[in-house]
Amino acid sequence: MKTKIAGIGHYVPENIVTNDDLTQFMDTTDEWIRERTGIEERRYATKHKESTTSLGAKAAKIAIDRAGIKPEEVDFIIFATLSPDYYFPGCGVLLQRELGITKSEAAALDIRNQCSGFVYGLSIADQFIKSGMYKNILLVGAEMHSMGLDFSDEGRAVTVIFGDGAGAVVLQPTDKEDQGILTTCLHSDGTHAEELAMINPGSHGGYHLGVEKFGYPDPSTPGGVFVTQKMVDDNMLSPNMTGQLVFKTAVVKFPEVIKEALDKTGLTTEDIDIFVPHQANLRISQFVQRTLKLPDEKVVNNIQKYGNTTAASIPIAMSEAWEQGRIKEGNLVCLAAFGSGFTWGSALIRW
Ligand code: UT7
Image 1 (cartoon, rainbow, N blue to C red):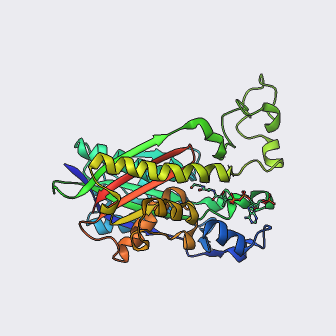
Image 2: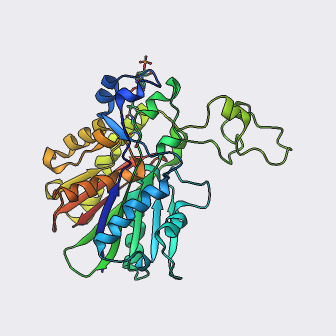
Image 3: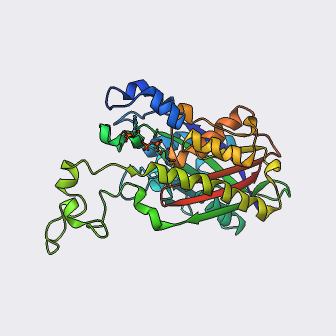
């Protein structure tokens, strides 16, 4: 028994934000953003009207429809995001409510694996399907970054990169010999956890990070340490990134983890029909493409239009490629991701 993708869909908000639009808020240029990242525009969801869950629900409905099932047939939801609607509960149960999945055996799981969230989710779903525990798993990657970014000059290196969107797949068992997920490879290394992170608000209480810096009250004071006034005053409630470290590590880990998947399955880079990398930065994807010696037609890039949508980027890119007829039955699809944690992973799927 293997796991097949039975349905796929994506949704991006209508509101297009160009690089020039961002120059109204911060000291940046279209030229800098295009040159360093390849990004031309991104989408921002509408505040008060949309959320990470609502974006995810729109993508999920398309995937469910294309799988030919009804929402109530979904028995397990996996929701990957770093920008959840609430600190808790997670988006999984909110999506369950939004889709009206009421059956008593249904369950929802949220995962926090940032850019590699979709690949991690795929691997989790694969194990549950292969074990026979679930028959219709809905895996969603969705992000509403625009709510948490710093639009001042200080935040420009991070803010220009990220966009909002969602992608989803429905996973089912298949007994066809040459179809489905062939392998998944997952890795993590917490050494650089804070180098690409949003650490506030949080329960760290200054642990590891310097209490003074965050303006925590005397440790004997009960409560009130999740978010401090100093965090607000000093603009410490947005993501930070040591861009060059992330870049340099990513271009090593992407090819490494793809090779691992190919070696495990006895395949080679020539066998790959289509490569869907996490859309981190066009320059990273181009570097990986050159390392793997893949021709342009085998590589999916849409970061130009959507920016980096973290856990949503692979399912959005895969869904678009499928809609454009670039992914066909029998194709070997290679997915790979690297990001915050650091966490990284790959998957090989026979479509
Ligand atoms: O999903 C995984 C998530 N992240 C990534 O994959 C990101 C990986 N890293 C990167 O993509 C790149 O490191 C960035 C695109 C984030 C930055 O490019 P860089 O070539 O590493 O630039 P830098 O951070 O070294 O900054 C170079 C200069 C600096 O100015 P000075 O100090 O040389 O005067 C920055 O202040 O560019 C400046 N800069 C900007 N200028 C205009 C930083 N951000 C901007 C900006 N617009 N948005």
